[in-house]
Length: 177
Image 1: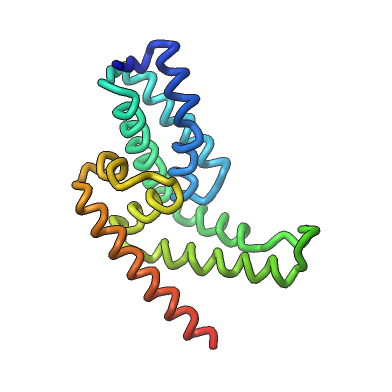
Image 2: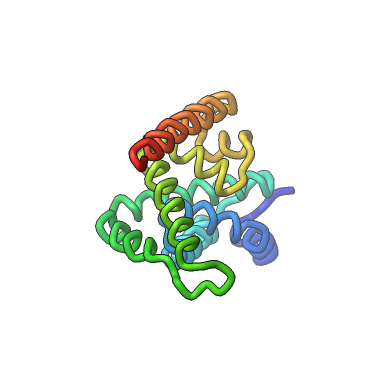
């Protein structure tokens, strides 16, 4: 079914079906919900303003994911210092969690920091595929369409990213003991 980005019903359907996915993609690049929400809105604004026609809902979704990914990457590049400050603030675990003790919250926050640091240390081509695969829940075919590469290439990159993460995380474990 053809999708016209400026058609009110088509836009509403694409927005409702893809908002959560788009915000997830952006969130795993910028790690800030407010920025992710702003960039998600900007992605949908661009979708509408472009006045494009897509052959299917999937094509519209993949276009939105590409735009969202690029907006997020550009934001990170432009605001690297600001993002680092936000990350430092995010690493202070909340001690008001009732069902867990403060030590457990601190351990979990530290584990998240270690994994996030390992992911951020990956080359961009590997970092993007692992973020889209593991955090956004896209399958290999969808990732291939979003990045404009073959499905086989996506599989290779996911494999390489996982291996590099495994190495980085095992090095981190050795450094701790």
